[in-house]
Amino acid sequence: MACGWPVGSALVGLLIRKWSIPGQYLIQISSFILGMSLILSTILKDHVSHIFFSIIYGMGIGSWNYSLRYHSYKTVGCKLSEVSWSYQVFAQSLPTLLGSPAVFFTNENLGTSYGFIIGGCSALLGCLIIFSWAFVAKHQTNQEVLREAHLKTKIFQEDSLSAMKVSDEFNYRLNKENLAPNSWSKEERVQEFVLQTSNNSLPLPECLSTAV
Image (cartoon, rainbow, N blue to C red; front, side, top):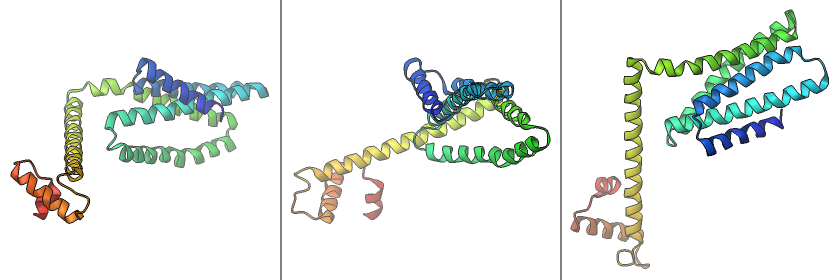
């Protein structure tokens, strides 16, 4: 499994880099590989087959984690990536918290193969749910919600970009030789910048406008 994980992540990265395959399809393929490998593992008998299963399962789980993170980053953007990923990790912890005792109880009472079957069916169910996203998103109500969310994300990104530009302009002007000689203090630099901005009728950063 440890050998298959980096191989699966590398394959998904190669597919995204060369063919720009959407993350949703990569998640579907990875979930399908996980589900089928868990279900087919119940018929394995010899040691070599179990090693092969571990490698395939590691490739599936590695590609699934990579594609899920890529899809979430691409959907919400870099500014909200930490928040979205924290919610996803929380959502992933719930099946682990509830599923592990359920599988343990099933293996103890019905047999060890039933735990693999439950895990495989859960992965295939997740693949089916992801496949249904496209049909659910086409609904008129969901289209309106998606447009509003996209508009809010776009406005947030534009505001962040404008704030970065104002900050860069502020730092650039403070570092100019005619505005900020080496002998000036930080307060003198700020005062000179405010004076030059007011004389040139340029927009003043919010932090300085409130201070003035």
